Amino acid sequence: MSARILDGREVAEAVRAEVAERVAALAKQGKVPGLATVLVGDDPASHVYVRSKRRLAEKVGINSLHFELDTDATQDEVESLVLRLNADPAVDGILVQLPLPGDLDDKRVTSLIDPNKDADGLHPYNLGLLALERAVLVPCTPQGVMRILSHYGINPTGMRAVIVGRSFLVGRPLSMLLAAKGTDATVTTAHSRTPDIAAVAREADILVAAVGVPGLIGRDAVKPGATVIDVGINRTEQGLVGDVAFDEVREVAGAITPVPGGVGPMTVAMLMRNTVAAAERSMG
Ligand code: GUN
Image 1 (cartoon, rainbow, N blue to C red):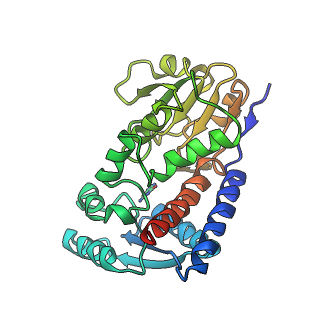
Image 2: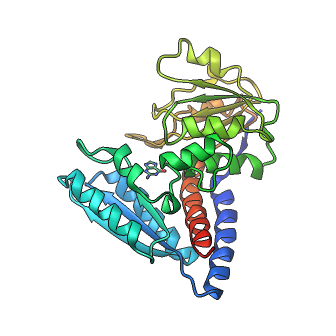
Image 3: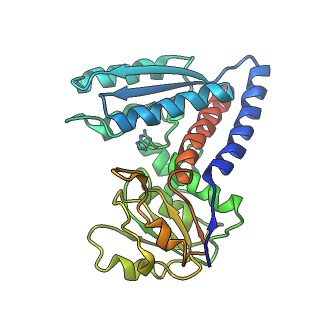
């Protein structure tokens, strides 16, 4: 048996259409949403990600404002830029691409973003609302994973979900979303200090890999018929690969997201969704 492919590009397209409609409704009120992207340094992957975010913004009618700082930018320079964007009424959403280079403090910068403009949903206030199940701006990648599941009619209620990875960007917020009332998965978070990750992962009806280790999840880590969501995007000599050994896992899984073309496009689509939500709220 070969797993059903969960096509993130198809789901992202549906989100894009929905966002474009909401942008058009705002335009009727004279409002064009603005997304400010901030890129510090010269990490090639970050440049690729930010370019795709800017491109999609323009495509759905969101005004893209872009700011670049050198690798040797100081903490003060990054923070001053964020404060300036907080005060700019043309900016509804702010995205500071992570990780920041060198000794720059990601968490400090993220905490300075106006929570109402936090298009990434990573500000402590928004993560706090997520813990309270009252979030408006939900982190993009976890939100994208949830949307893939709902699009394909995979209902987590009563399922065992195992998330491999406990990052603030993905693993932690996703564990809250999957365990939330109304979603009701039973969630386990595994990480680098978990003994025998494969044994834990094999218990999952929904298995999410979000660690950044190419091919970490092999077929021995997957329960037959499980839904496997691969959040990893690893640049290797073989090209872009996920955290899941796709070719072997697709033989046992019931459904699986590919890399590329799985979760990646969803992260970008959900950033647009958050930006529009922030712009709608700014209109009252
Ligand atoms: N780096 C990798 N993923 C993300 C993301 O979703 N948001 C930001 N700001 N940086 C990232």
